[in-house]
Figure: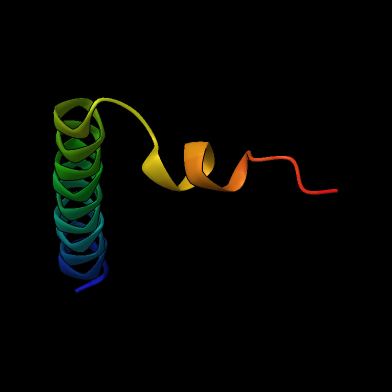
Length: 48
């Protein structure tokens, strides 16, 4: 039974890792398609 629980934990870990990689891939695609970080460029204005 312990081996089954270990395998289940590894499977859940791999699924979570895959979900994180998909989210990161979507974020990278969004940033590269917009041409940079619009929030950073918008907040980088100097105010006196």
